[in-house]
Length: 484
Image (cartoon, rainbow, N blue to C red; front, side, top):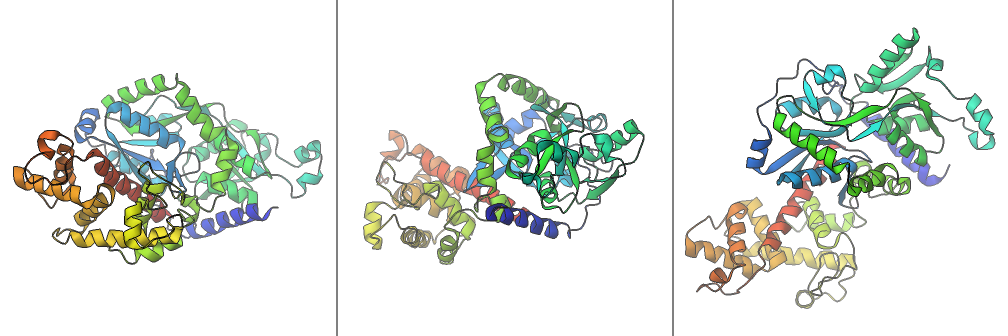
């Protein structure tokens, strides 16, 4: 076994060892649990009025993940397009395990559960399922014999289960009350005999169970064929050829009373599935196995490693000089350069933190392509900007003013403060909806030519989007890190 594969499998085993010690949730079932309270009244019109679609996701190597700081995944990419179609922004809510999904959906923590769930009859009694995003089927995941590379195909087949009926009196490990467990129970009725079910903690994902089969920690599990095939590409010692079910629908989940959102989503699903864009996304995560293998085995697959970039240690080192944490600084660096130390903008800004030549000269930086020099200079400049905004009493607001100043220049942000004072139409110490609105006005001549406005035109949407994107990414990074 190659060292890289061994290390990855070892990491999965360590992760399982940690999560298995967590307290088992009282109810592992995400949608069938009768103790879940009824749904709040919050449908499409309310979502549009709020301007935000809150989507609950479960992190995984195909549905939602962060790789080298970039947010990716099949569900994530579709959600972005769906929110854009509605005309609202997207807010991701990451569930730590499956047990909370029904509760979070009904209590309004999210408006939709974006994960491929099978719409069983019992689930449909209490929740609404969208038109299916794709078809899947459940397959048995089993390990090939240790010496499988030295065997002929028929010899390997002779040592594997080739039909589900061969599972009689054997043990299969699945999450408690999952659709996989339900399928095993139905299978026992169909064959009229016993298959022993090892119910594992709901915190353990199907991806982890598949890895545990590969390491020999468990004998068998069941998974959707799309996920199983992707892992079998990485774990060559796995066989996923034995079907356990017929084709099943993979759908998103909504509140039972969200009829407007349900209708809109179903129309959108039907529409997007007729586009090339949909199949490009689907193939990216379910067909292009080399790409998936690349990010799963990367040191910077945040969901598994807790690492964002090759520069995390430097970011942590210099973030100590700032009044905010390293994760927020990392989000800003990604915004600036996508962690590319050779990035260069049209305005000649260069390096991880996109230092302008004049700023580099002022800060004494000779080599902006040096990751350490760039982060050292960038954080020093951020500290200078922070000190310029001592008049802002709220720490979080002050951070937003500092970030905007880094992007647009402090003088343009000060002009935005001046404009609020002149017009007496906002709070000069609040970023959201106040300084934001003022910066937008400075895009127009009637405002940037006013007496008292010293630095003229600014493309106001740029610093607004800059601050917003950094904070949204910061929130996602933290959710993934906290879920580990």
